[in-house]
Length: 188
Image (cartoon, rainbow, N blue to C red; front, top):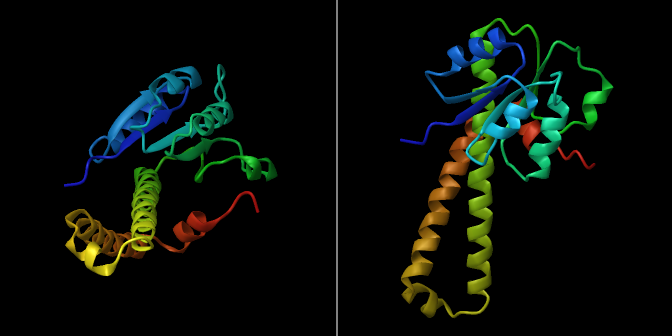
């Protein structure tokens, strides 16, 4: 069974944070933060998805988002804001935008599920590319007989085949919006 994804909910409005946590806690490991600084304290590599209020009084969601990128964390971020999206969001590195009030548990769950799927795909793709690179490097220097006789190489080949299948299955679960998001290059 796959490990349960971790969701960090950061919003300075306690009733909102607590409601989101209640909606998600059956499916996910949930952490709550009631300020931007608390969000930064609870943010680590274990967090898969962040539901981040854009406007918080101490440290804004945008500043938390910058810190996520500065730390090199790979979590997916949904900005949750009462501010209607405008062109200024184009410069922000987030994965989903939800307008408050989010009063539908299904909408929130669906957003988190989508972001978890994208995270899973990213992790699988990184592992696949890493192994494929190793396989290509060793194949360029070793004879086919040597490769076939090496247990580690055989295991690598088997893991690559298994990963290829899992990537295909995960990609099948992604919808058109997920794929557009996956292959969008913010740098142009």
